[in-house]
Image (cartoon, rainbow, N blue to C red; front, side, top):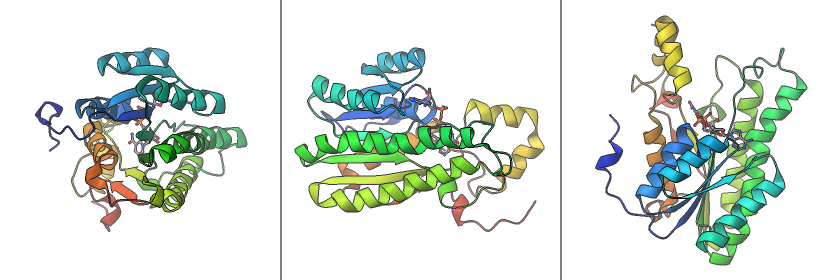
Length: 263
Ligand SMILES: NC(=O)c1ccc[n+]([C@@H]2O[C@H](COP(=O)([O-])OP(=O)(O)OC[C@H]3O[C@@H](n4cnc5c(N)ncnc54)[C@H](O)[C@@H]3O)[C@@H](O)[C@H]2O)c1
């Protein structure tokens, strides 16, 4: 089972500055807590002002209101991080959406396709483009881009633009990791499996049979907790992962390793 955050005594990120997009909720929020607990200055970016502010307050960090699809917003985010704390050491480019209108290719319209590409993929391009010059000047940096296990394997219930966007995040991260490695910058794609979110909990409460059908695919027999994904980000952000670069870093409880037959 996951380790309680109160039991964590790692202080691997003292003095480092971490920018987190989508810090107001879910994986981003858990990561803001974790990186702060490891000593980092955390810049919490989110389009949701209330959630983002609350996250920043909780971790004694800085809130910046950002729409990650907007180049000026993203450039201002990394500039503010640098101006406030003097460095940009970690970029966790994590904000993403999976709206219901993104479904089978047969029913997903161009507007829904483009919106998901913008928020999930173009945003990562913008954030990497903005973060890299700071990291180049420092000769140091760790970029972690949130992809998904669906970038590695096909999902039985299609979300066509989401899956394609995460495949793009994965391929882009790999290429950036190769290009900037000799400048001391590592770039990895984080590929979480399904995480225990309010949405998933609702599904469990409503329809235990559908839930059981999903769990059979997960060797560990449960969904991930956000804190477990945050722990992986903290590792990738820290020097403990100094030889880990340009990877598809799976945190999926073994889903992608399993050949599963129905219950
Ligand atoms: N939850 C899962 O099961 C799961 C699995 C694999 C990958 N992921 C990925 O992990 C990331 C985080 O997912 P989560 O479950 O924590 O989501 P979440 O919905 O809990 O949080 C996402 C945050 O991003 C913010 N956001 C959305 N659009 C934005 C925009 N345009 N600009 C700035 N901020 C914006 C939201 O306000 C929210 O606070 C996403 O990229 C998601 O695709 C999630």
